Image 1 (spheres, rainbow, N blue to C red):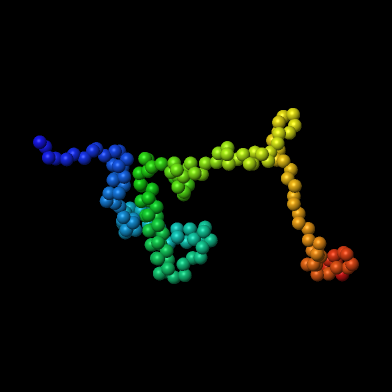
Image 2 (image 1 turned 180 degrees about the vertical axis):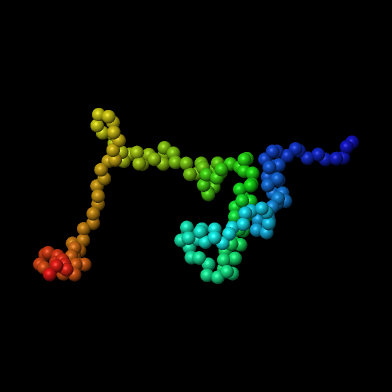
Length: 165
């Protein structure tokens, strides 16, 4: 009798999840610290970019060196991100829950729209759909003074001041 226990084969989805959760293949420090062959940005190019962006020019050589180093680092980061293989990655439609349950929950069906359809009517020879007129309920306050905010009035008229001599 064989005493070895065999586990069932993993599904492709489980294998895919294990590969995602495996050891990382890169680090953000690799992006910042790498000294690859990115073309150096000259101080003239930096000044040109700052003028195009309507940003102030550096006030000292130390500030200029700091700006150049920061720009180089950002360009290195962008270039490294651009090299990532995303052929098998489904594009992100929006930043929200896109699971089947969430889509079902956000779905608007005929039942939810019935109340709105009841507010419409078909009119004319061509069967045009029109919103039914609704009565506007206005609460009147008998003590409300329409002219309470007016600075000057003459009798029941509003007096308007002008610069005309």
